[in-house]
Image (cartoon, rainbow, N blue to C red; front, side):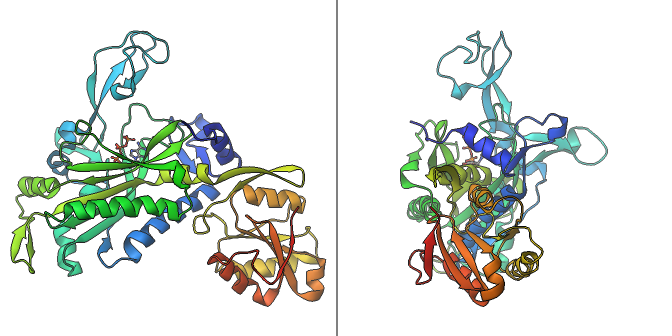
Amino acid sequence: MTNNVSMETIVSLCKRRGFVFPSSEIYGGLASCWDYGPFGVELKRNIKDAWWKTIVQERDDVTGLDTSILMHPRVWTASGHVDSFADSMVECKSCHLRWRAEELRDEKCPKCGGKLTKPRMFNLMFKTFMGPVEDEASTIYLRPETAQGMFVNFENVVAISRKKLPLGIAQIGKSFRNEITPGNFVFRTREFEHMEMEYFVKPGDDKHWFDYWVKERFNWYIGLGIKKENLRLRQHSKEELAHYAKDCYDIEYLFPMGWAELEGIANRGNYDLTQHAKFSGKDLSYYDNESGQRYIPYIIEPSAGVERSFLAFLIDSYREEVVGGEKRVVLSLHPSLAPIKVAVLPLSRNEKLTPLAKEIYGQLRSSFMTYYDDTQSIGRRYRRQDETGTLFCVTIDFESLEDHQVTIRDRDSLAQIRVPIEKLEQTLQTKLSGEPFDASPLWATREK
Ligand code: ATP
């Protein structure tokens, strides 16, 4: 089973409309590294803001953190990454392509059918050196996850937040993994952003909170518009579970190449704090006032990737339809995710229309991410805005100069309403907060 939208379609839209460019393109690009263009950066920011709002802003029991990418090397020994954050890799003896052993169905090279070498373990952490001397003692790692920053700050956060367990610590930040087979556009890359939350709970309460977070995270994607039939939960088998994990679910999305992980939710038991206590010599146990007990908290971890969400939101919102005999491509992204909320479009580039259009643009941009465009025909400009998911187009025409009204066009219903300029911002606010466009008493026409 695969998604109806092909990856080529999405890659081409992303390039054409300025969502994603190959990194260092003028030098021929760098494998599986991508730059986010003017629209891509907005979508990414909106995804992170939506996550932060749900996980931190709207909750009493979670607090935010931003820790450094470079950490003390012993962190990665304690966490188990130095010894076991590795993939099993094989190489084709004919074409020399390398593969993750777990991806292979039989013992032949999927590309040329050649014989494969025996599997060998390959550590996925990027290594570099700190300071001017390049030796063993100055070796440092680029973090492969943000989680460790939260574990090692557990004590600090508990002390400062004056909160009791259950307590969550959340952060969004870059992670690096020297993946053997990056690919599928931004699905698997060597540099990406994590949105992670470590939820510290009393042992024994972990099953309840694990189930709770699996549901919460699944529903987050649905609340932001992902179709339910394109999402599923998959529980890890005993063999697949990481050595520290008690239980783990993947939220999978139906990508064009098939079902694949979008986010993982793990019950990590008390492994992390136990390890850090052992390696740092610090007592990381927690004194529970209510029960009078001291214990090492268990941790429930929802861990999501910004870029995978980015890709899923793009694929799921992509639609092609025929309007007025012409194909229109539209990204029906959730209002909070749409890169641009309002486009201001004077009917034509005309010396009489421009001043009013610019004035309106100036007024709206402090409230909404707004875009100004006066090139080409209005029909073409509507299509361009549809392709980047802009929610509303505001058109200024010659009548506007007389009656001080402008037209708002809605991306999804194509309904158009005419509103007085002084009510424009308020109307857009109301529409943005979800009032259905067609229900408006001001509803006038619909683009055919
Ligand atoms: P996979 O099995 O696909 O390699 P994982 O199980 O190693 O992923 P986690 O360590 O659970 O991934 O990380 C949590 C999330 O971070 C993933 O669900 C994914 O969204 C994102 N992620 C992990 N690795 C990458 C990567 N190389 N590129 C982009 N996103 C990633």
